[in-house]
Image 1 (tube, rainbow, N blue to C red):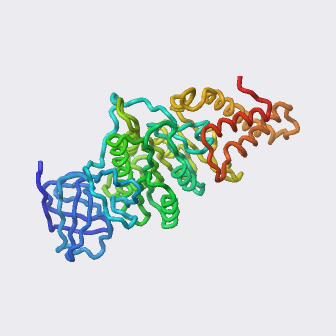
Image 2: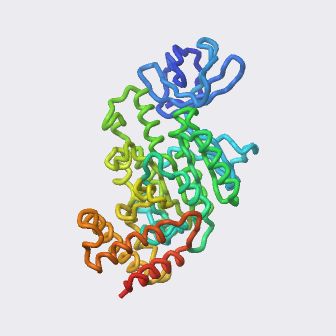
Image 3: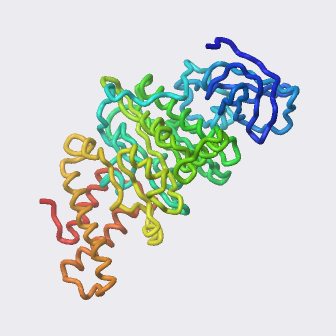
Length: 441
């Protein structure tokens, strides 16, 4: 076991962000590396692959101009660590934890390895208490619970980024406690970066943000979520805060994982993604939760774009296995001009019942959600029949349920710029039912 840094001048080749170093007698996967150019410029990197005495290093930054003979490579015998402090609140960083807001770096109180670990099941506290997003389709019917991991499945071209921005600005904790948001954005264009930056500037200092742009090193796309989760764990379990972690877009993360796997010449799995993608995603998602007899919580809201709108694609498929439900955005809803374009029927929050009811939201919440879902689902089925026989061919009762489904989408699901608290959402649901002669028992 090495206990000291070692420096080499044995670079054999440089291919874009990949640097091959020969005659390395000891290294380990994930080890941090520093490259010093002849002009004194320092670049950070990480060991990706070890083949005998040849080591493949992924560099965080631009490698053009590096000299094969004069550039030194130092192996630090340590994995990547994140600087931690409460002073990170209200700050914006890149995927390598460097400030993007023009302010100096804060002074860390401690350092922690970014690799982290899933919460021990024995130490877990069951998720309870809702987090209010301000959207009726989520809060009323698919409630997000503190300590839960609930992904948002989107399709290319749908306003997932606008939905994320609204949740960033609107999310609130229903109970007591200090609530903050850790936002991790991956593979952004400059337009998207500017959009989110403006959103954050209008918020109070109850956030920490990590941005990785599309043109930045792909390995930072894998690093940024781990940095965000490490910060979230510190704020939750060392500073007793309730933290909502939003990661967008996990599809870009998985594509980066595939690219790195290809660089390592690993055997590909389904659709070219590495066979260990399931365990890699689990190593992120399972860091959400609560600890028994300790305040604070980490709740995770990953956002992913389903390639080719295919919910059976490996990325949403594996995410669905690991997480506790899903929120699904629909092209059909988008074409109707609804925002958010949430398709209620395939949505699910498996932990919803533990954060609603008397003493948390309201005693009629569960019954109301069930009745709204039941009537809307029946209305959707009747639309198929009406397309064949015409609306006039339906029974009067069926016509009423069909009208309810349309009204439900236009009034309950669609919000535009409006923010609704949970009580406004529940009152609206009761009002809709009464409008069509339906009552809670």
